Amino acid sequence: MDLINGRLFWPDTYTKKTHTNPEIAPLYDVIIVGGGMSGVLTAKALMDEGLKIAILDKDIPGEGSTAANTGLLQYSNDIMLHELIEKIGKKDAVRFYKLCSKAVDQLEELSQTMQNKADFIRRPSIYYASKKRHKKKIQKEFETLLRFGFPVDYWGNFVLKKKMGFEKPAALVTYQDAEFNPYKFAQELLAQLKEQGLHVFEQTPVHVIEDEKEEITIHTIAGVFRTQKIIYTTGYEEVPFGKVKGANINRSYVLVTNPIPDFEGWEEKALIWETARPYLYLRTTVDNRIIIGGLDDKKAKAPSEKRIQKHTKRLLEELQELFPQYEVTADYLYGASFGTSKDALPFIGEHPERPNHFYLLGLGGNGTVYSMLGSKILADLVMGRENEDAHIVTLDREDGVKL
Image (cartoon, rainbow, N blue to C red):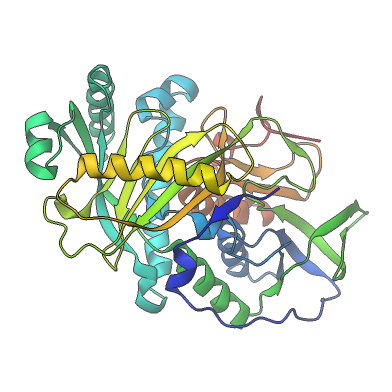
């Protein structure tokens, strides 16, 4: 299934090196299926453990959903903390939010090793109430985040208008969030790991997976691979083994503008999103463009050109309503599939019925952050260590991963 249609922005910002598939090793400690953000971060975590790792990607690593990622990094999630507390309890909900905040720090640490730091820049996030009735939710979330030690402010309509120029009932302002170039980050990390011994196999779809006594055998068009453990980091693609019950695949639309000479009236170039569902999200780039996305619809397949034109026209109108002072045109337009889970949590862990089969599926608007925290959890599980947080995102839940 095609996940993306249109002209992507990030691949035009970075030129990667040419690649040749290596010779297949007799045995790998772990094989990762999927070479996007989740796969690369997982490879990093496992190579730090001294393991022999290979990545198999059915296309080109980093050219799928990672290239369509809009690069907003936030500790807040699609589900507010006070709502998550009601679902899974205070201890686990707060811990999960803390893990997300720590993951942003870890992504920053990795970005420091890269050219231009992969354009990683700390930004505040402005989460505004789309409608007057959403103001109470914003207030409750502010109180909840403040109570548990998260850096947060509350802006009423007057302050929001003074800071940003547009009027909304209220806004939650979180700090220590960030933006980055996800394509550059993934490609540079992949290049670093290849120099350290990572085997990367492009255009190598998995056909058959066989469990044996001590090994897993993987049949592909490139040859036969043998490994002790396998991890599926296939993003929004269908996993080649097992079935994710609690996932919904939708699609979102993105518009990237021309460079803007001056961002007057945009406080600290903050990340912006809203309480409406589906929601709009906005950010700026290092070359002074605006990325705006949203207007999601509940279809899995990438949208047609006609539909992309229709939706991005609306995105441009929404942008001009917020910032009428900017003269903007649409330089890049695309539509891309993305996944969410029914309980708003990612799927990370070992298959409940098949030992040595692991998953990192960072479904949701916070996918990169989930991939970062998930790679750390998986490193513990693969190495046979206990991880006190694994139960929060376990596959063995009502809408988890089944055979």
